Amino acid sequence: MLGGERLSGIIVETEAYLGAIDAAAHTYRGRRTQRNQSMFLEGGHAYVYFTYGMHHCMNVVAGHVDEPVAVLIRALEPTEGLDAMRTLRPAARKDTALCSGPGKLCQALSITRLLDGNDLVTGDALWIEQERTRGLPVKLIGVSPRIGVAYAGEWADKPLRFFVLGNPHVSRP
DNA sequence: CCCGTGATTTAT
DNA sequence: TAAATCACGGGG
Image (cartoon, rainbow, N blue to C red):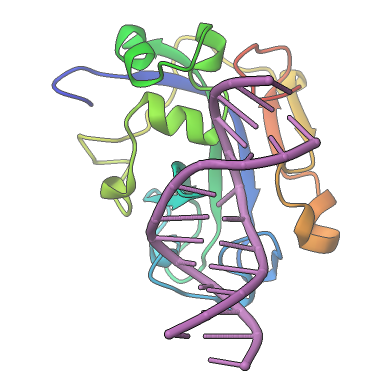
């Protein structure tokens, strides 16, 4: 929600981060810091962090308490509040550039660290609902290695990115 | 391709 | 305390 208006989209691209064993995860080897502490919450909470001096990224915590696994939301197909999103993201020249990346979608929906740790099930500022007008056939789910984790050794190549095949709002095919 | 930008982490 | 890093995005 932003100023009483609802900004929303359908999740079309995600990546899984598997906790202490995953060299690409912020919680690799059980690291627990001020930044990543919300990854240790019960599943259904948000983990929002700030990086590169200008971008935010949003994750959905996916494990139980002290089991720090999460799903990074990498792209949305925007559905409500497109005009507000265009204002929030002046650099986006086409609507497919509004939410086609983890930093982009946070800018488009005004998601910042202020929302870190929020409950995405019961929240009224930031939440996730089941998408109920369109199903997604399993055959339309693409799988690939994760993006931007080349430093992670063997974990760099694991097939942990999932996206909707052919959807133009995905960050890259 | 290269660069901004600054919080966070990791090394002294 | 200091240096390096970074789950990115925009512009050339």
